[in-house]
Length: 120
Image 1 (cartoon, helix red, strand yellow):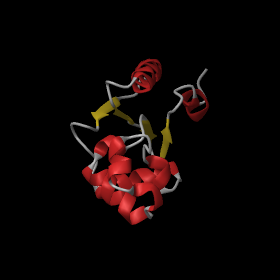
Image 2 (cartoon, one colour):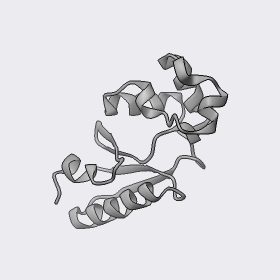
Image 3 (tube, helix red, strand yellow):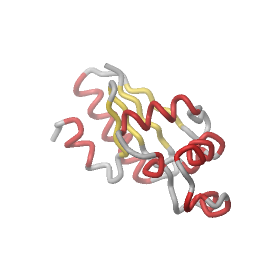
Image 4 (cartoon, rainbow, N blue to C red):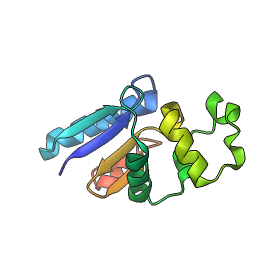
């Protein structure tokens, strides 16, 4: 089964999660796909798939600390508006997001990966 990480190389937490994922993939003989989502942003359909795999609301996927969040007035936005914002402003996407099969995790902090994969 493929492992995927939506990664921002400028983020220390994302770099830490990537290193963890690389070690896990190597140890378990799994392929790791690294998606730099600022260069290759997920489309609306993929964002909805990520939301379903995460089992969360769209608001949980949004970085409310970003300037674009305030500039777009997303404080009281519904899921549809947040989806639109994420599709056009990928910097708003929480990071890192790790996917395996039909499960996903916002790996913030990266130590959450240990329980998610049952690997210590």
